[in-house]
Length: 502
Image 1 (cartoon, helix red, strand yellow):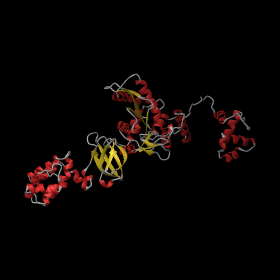
Image 2 (cartoon, one colour):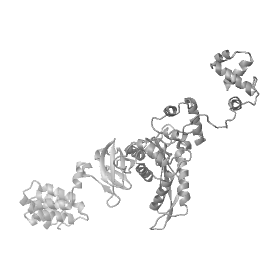
Image 3 (cartoon, helix red, strand yellow):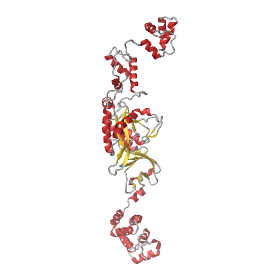
Image 4 (cartoon, one colour):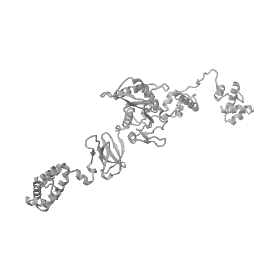
């Protein structure tokens, strides 16, 4: 229309049609045709101020007898082209070439593109985002909850509704979970991938704390457990921009649709969590089978024909939820997880380690290498210690048991075994006698077994049940005389045991 206005101004100044065409870069015949149209419409320069471009176009190019919106040329099925455009590698040029192959007299490429964009604007009054098949799945929790009852206790509570929508086909998944916490969030993703039967290239979550530690336009910080789940499935995480709901318009629309189909229709019923998810699964069948008015196909048909073939395959096994934590190794070479303590190699004291906690195992990593693995504890002893993690001195002490000392004593003779039992029985706790037994057995190491048996018998007879008392018997060779033994102990009262003879 800008050129039409300039053409009328030049024509008023007496410029020829040929010269006007040369100035505007338009064919002379086109200028002559437009001047004829202007004359027929009674238009001449200067134009009235109320003549907008739209009014001017209508007066110049309207055809008598043709109703508004009527197309003189054969149009394609724009809805089917919108579906085809979601396929990988398909663009408007490819679709136009196919259209012209069937309709050689059809629209040119530029007009074809204009008409298609006009059809897209009718689908949504806001900016449309192109979502290639298999590219993105949008996930979020519904702001509204569903009522759940515990059948055993009768307690009624509210459950969250997780919703996921594939970008290209609008294929929808939903389920109820008790909370929005990390375990429920990740397990919902696992079941979502299983429902789709494949994996898209990207997951677009809202900035839920369970998935995103720190929301940022430039560098969002993903929760490590969430990132490990994504790594297992080979999918990328692309959080929506903070406070930009149109970044995830797909799931917002899916949430509203799910609320209508799920919450609206189930609002008068009370379920257990399993019953609620069974009802939601039935509602999903209706949602995905519903024919979309503008496109003329259902979500399921679009998913099966366009999106499912290009989804990446699922891994061999589902992801097992694991929580990742940072911990500092304490001086006793143990790390605390939920009130229980798990050992790592003693050389890592004061080092920072990564903890991977599942329902069954605790794994500890240092600089990317696994350094320890334990069965997770929920009761019993609060320490889980691997002997290989101990310093050698600690390891030897941990291997001490009453039965082991008894076997050592028995290997020398029955009197020595009796001495070991007497030492252990003489302490409030057997463990308090371990060091004494160890010292006695070391004293006996370089002594003939026959003499060791005599020493053990004498020590039991006079209740000399301390390391120093037995060492005195050995040093003074008092194992054969009961009187000599008693005199030696009297002369050295600090060598007497708690039950020593007076």
